[in-house]
Image (cartoon, rainbow, N blue to C red; front, side, top):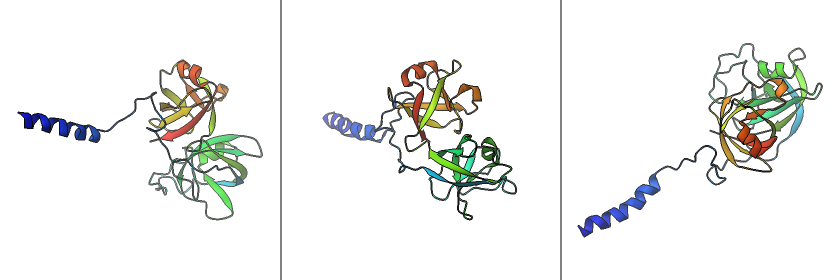
Amino acid sequence: MLRRHLLFFVTMPLLAACAPHLPALGQATPTALETAVLPEFTRVGTASWYGPGFAGRLTASGEVFDPSELTAAHRTLPFNTHLRVTNLANGRSVVVRINDRGPFSGGRIIDLSRAAAESIGMIGSGTARVRLEPISGVGGVLPAAPDPSLAHWDVIARGFQPGELLLLSSATSGPILVRVVGNEIPASAGAEILVSPELSRELGSSVTVQARR
């Protein structure tokens, strides 16, 4: 009997150490959700776009290329990095996700999907001078607004995919783990991310976002 008790007390800590720990949504801590932080990165240069002839092909990340999604190709940034691309000629911007490699010619710094190129008004010209600003993995700031249809830790975030997990923080709160449930935001909202009224009161009108998988 004594030997059985001793065996129980020896094995229980080992079993506990093997059990995975998953933080609950809204209860993230920096140590539980450490992410690879990219160096500070802002670039100005020429963007091009691609689509015709590439639809349905595999991208360098292994995804199937869909010209209707807000994605882009970059030579070095990690896949799933989110960038704000601003057309310097008209001030229009779009948030894209890197899922491919390129461009490799013409001194261009990014290749946009057709949908992304349409968003910033560069379909006709084919190229545009743009500014690239990371908004995930490097502590970029997004304008946020409340949406009464959202509850708790669900968010709608332009440029992100439903099911993605984001780590939000602000000058007044954070970090908070949330789940993306949509990515369509009307222009009238004046925001890149919509959060629940509760989160809006806690985070304010500007949030720092990092993408989680």
